[in-house]
Image (cartoon, rainbow, N blue to C red; front, side, top):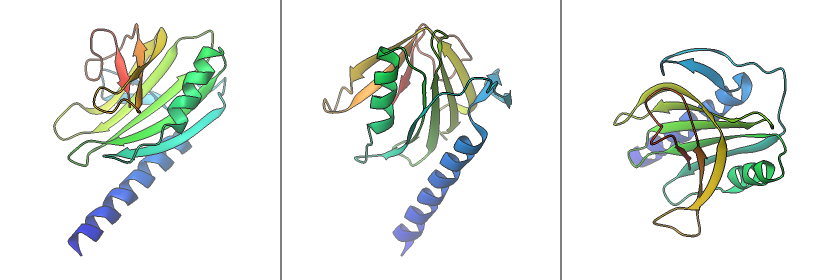
Length: 158
């Protein structure tokens, strides 16, 4: 019974996060904690959303973003990823050529950075996930933004 309640809570949280991000779009963030609405003067076609947790992995949105990036077409997607402990991290990716790639992250990770983080990146790469070669991560490179999810100028998108 407890595991059912825990699963229900996780699914409810995931749905709420996806709906929130979908309704309000991605956020522009300063210092990783304060936010203001993003500029939506140009809209990108949606590549959809995915909820990834453990062995459950939906590559559809990131594959769509990769194709959009390669064809220099606009695209946007939301990926909700759960940590091993069940903490939600929501990635919102917007590609609006010829502008840079924008990655906004809302993190509720108890053991990592928490809050809102917004990155402006110059390129997008696609790399196999180290432990599971059938999975791929998108790597936003040449990024600038607050400390948190950036590592040597790169932000990894699961």
